[in-house]
Length: 438
Image (cartoon, rainbow, N blue to C red; front, side, top):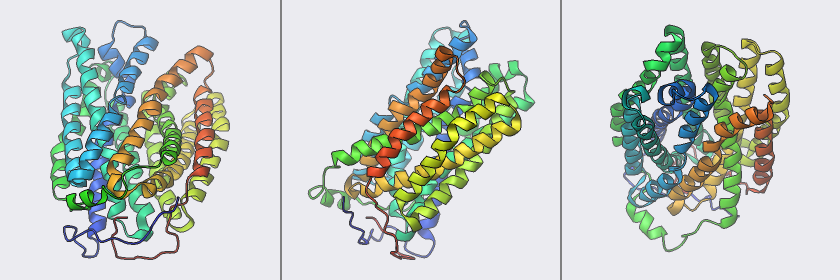
């Protein structure tokens, strides 16, 4: 697929003074981190949430119910990606990002304040499910407009670094959630963590929502309504081949991300390590993921998208089996942290150029909806089921290596799709200060 890399003016609404696009991109990244913190916190406290809302079930069954509720949040993500993404193509990126953030704030506040099963009975898990569905809708509408904004505000030779903020701030959100979880698990007893401690993590996310809304209201716009209307007549479809390849690639990256996120539960439930050690693994994984994101983005600006993502994917594929064997034979803090850090670094380094390659290949007038929808479908199908499937596989097979084999199968399929993606990087083109919207 041929991609036209000619720079395009984005209009006077975007300040063109030196540094303004970078500040705007950092602001988008901050809001993105807040949304993903809210969404991901659920998975880190899956065991405690299971005890709160499904107290009558066996521990393993309660965990499955909790993970199923976690997965339900992915069901509405495609709908959010389509509706809010379309809004972002018609009204602008900023209004769409404001809408998704406001909905996320409402859902996280509702989840934090939902009464326990012992207080209101069966209404409790129903309320939890409703807020989780709203949360998924909001996050589904976040990725398309924010990724489009990051790419459109970037100088051509820095797109990789700018779009790395999308994945990098997700990792930062995991880091903050891990720090919060570690602090709570160390300061509170297991009973207190089950009863009310996990709610503190949710309320922290709710508390920063007003600041996030303020930041996003002040963002410059990169896509004007007039541009959207003018572009609809010329290019109105995303190639089917690109959509299929994008789903396979993002599906593999999604499974990789949520296998890593499951390490907190895996360390406690399978390796029988303490909650504080498990949350420490989350912190290590998030730090390494942040480094992997920005290194992957940096290298993709210089070497191209496809070589970087394929190299990182193949390295991760080769490390999976040895890593899981090691932590099961020697389930210690050191081995857990080293393996989690390596997996996180390589997965993130592959994910950034993969997302960018797909984004650059989507027509700009459909970018918010296109990226949001493809990403959300991939997340809904693969991300929402990953942790539930892993837990089921471990129980059904009795093999603690199941997460590694599941992740490896996904990477093989995703790697083949990556090899078929067009190279979209404008390598060698230097536009040091010109922000573009291609």
